[in-house]
Image (cartoon, rainbow, N blue to C red; front, side, top):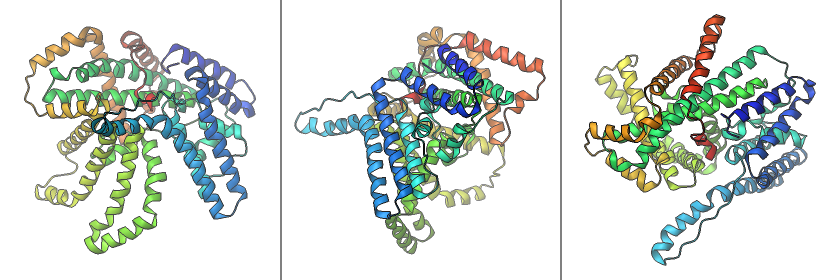
Length: 506
């Protein structure tokens, strides 16, 4: 049941009719039933056992924390529970990565090749595992109170809007919202419906149409070199942004229809002035999780604390940052692994961005002196545009690894980026290869309009302004005209059934 499908919209509509017409104290039960139905309609039934294992082990551990004061016993239970949950995730997602890594050497040394496994992971395993681990650690640290009712913990873990692509939420933020009584709020529901419609348009009109072009360019690398490789990468990051943020719009919109407000996962990332700021605005939930539950605990370990003191004594102020760089390396390695069972993700989605951020921090004093020497005004629009463009190019470079078929394909594409090429011949190849499937002039025009509207929205978001005011302050005639045009655009230009959401794979 793809969340842009008619069947999903009917599922939501029926659920809302029941949800808003039952006693408020029973609303959480409707959400739980919806979540279970959604799971079993979208995944193999037996994979639910993985999710159930996570809920049972974490529930038992957090209840144990409430009754046990012995620090050693509590820590032992914590470690066992973490090993079980992380072990299931690692086994289901990364066994083939281990096998392929071993095969790389064994095939060359002895000719032995271990066959890959075909294990099916549970729906949203990467998202719900991180979410329930956060809950476990927060209970262990005393930040959150343990949930007494296992069914309520199951709802938090399997809340159906989040099962597709997050956002990863903390129990103390989302848990109470799922369980409290909600009264029908017309403004919140209409806001949710607008958000759903906008998310669908971003996905089926922009992302899925661009995917036709992007797939052609990435699958026919022999036809494109030089500037065309960069164009392919820029088109892909645009596709990815509209795909993932469109998914988040639908998820957040659906949840708002039920009276539950989720955290925003994007805050105008394409207006960021450096790559560090970009990752503070892109996939915010995952970045926040990695900082709170990996980076900060690592920095508090005795080894890194002592290392920081030694490095500061020997290398001065810059030396103090070395433990941070080490912790960041671990974080970015995990970021790459989270995105996929292949070293191309670790390199492109992890180490490349770690290198870009660390290099930016280390060279910051030089950059400041250079800007002062050149008398660059930070508020100058040309300088801002340069910063934004530079950031997008750095991001696009790493995402070549993300979308390439393999590590070798990514390296080949990057190498061809520096090969001189003509403009006309690749354009003709592209036109003949995808134009008719893409949809022609009307579709191109509608995509440009939607991209332009998203840019206007992002500018407001970047300035900490409420995007909803753009619509709600208009009179009814203008609003309904815009609604009609949006639905018309979806029907006319939507590439329905083209592809699933990219982040569903994670």
